[in-house]
Image (cartoon, rainbow, N blue to C red; front, side, top):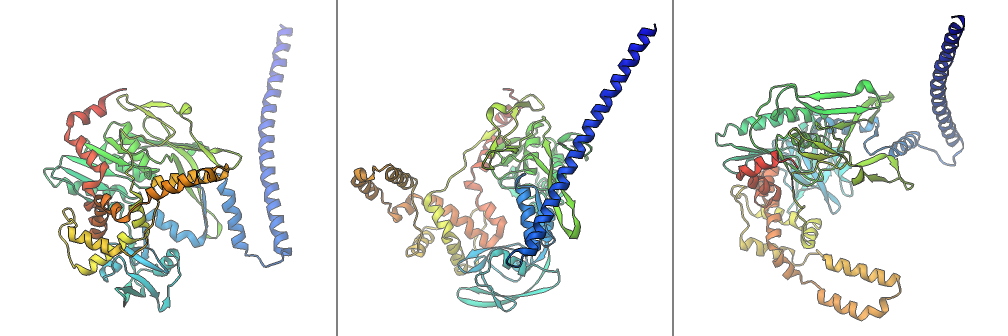
Length: 555
């Protein structure tokens, strides 16, 4: 009995030793980590001090520090960013969609900045500014050579304050005095009926009230008693606030449904986001349009609608951003936006496409290999996959423009002709039915006749690559005559190319011209007939059996 007691005491003793050993290892590890942090902070401080004291020229301490911080964060992922006090206003705009200003999109044209899109109902539009107006002076000072960023800062300011500008239109200089307002860029710039039965809601952001804007748009569309189908368009939407994505899903699914889960290093921050309110419409047939520019919150919406079998996703594979950022306040009114978690849609999948935690020797990151992607199941059992964005239920190839059209756009000739057309014509018909006449198209050809819009066809580009490779391998002299003959035979005739691509060019012109009269809303409406994703949605709505089959077929 005494022998057994001694054995138990010995075991207990060794057990305590093991426990203390584990505690010691954890403590040692923590101490080691803190030592590394302290050591490296001390090294940074010492280097900074030596540079400040002995460097041959004066240094900008703020600029040097920001560069160091930015480079440090660049080794993590593109979404972990330092936000200085000077950048706080731009960050606020990204999160809220609000700023003090005149309400206009701007671009570059030659040496000046040009108005490209006045926001309807805001100072720029109310004071008669038009797309194509060159901003040549701000507060009496020339704006020649200034970037869009520099001009934007000069136009922004406290709501209620004035900014005086001079614009050039048709070679005439016009002075304008604009009263700045609090500008709220809408998350839903457009909603309306495509035909008698189908409504569309264009969602371009996820700032505050995005869910309310979508819900209000749906309720307004539902006033049309013929409404039978809804398209939610998140193409090109880069995302935003996570809770607004949940609110938008909530419009179409019942209260109490899991929409997205977040998981990260800090376990206390892990959370499941559920729908909190009664839905607005749980049964209306729904299509979500996506493309490569649909990211983050857009992928939560499209992925959740797909996982819950609530609607059909049509378009191209989404961007593949399954990361969540949190903003932490720093001293001196600075902030840091840190990737703190990954998010998971209702099926349990994470659609993050790139692995930032493992970098190659050159610092690049790889996409998730197909062999590592896992299959998950939607509510009824349809297969969906993680690690590469949201795959549409109906995949469509992205419509590529001809090289000629790309050149006409990049040289701003489509834009310039629309400005020319607007200056000649004070009004046009309804945006949805506006069509360019044959005489209008002839006028466009005359307009660009003496302008530079040179371009290479895909075949010419490939031929240039052949030449380059042949020169590298010292074979070009042997094939030079054949190359020159082939190049000559392929020399494109611009007039012939214009006729060949006439339909595409007319579509681009009509959309740009309509925007001159009806702003963003008009451009969207003018594009319905030529929008392959919209037309695919209308087609599947027209075939109810196909719509149901897509949502119920288990593969």
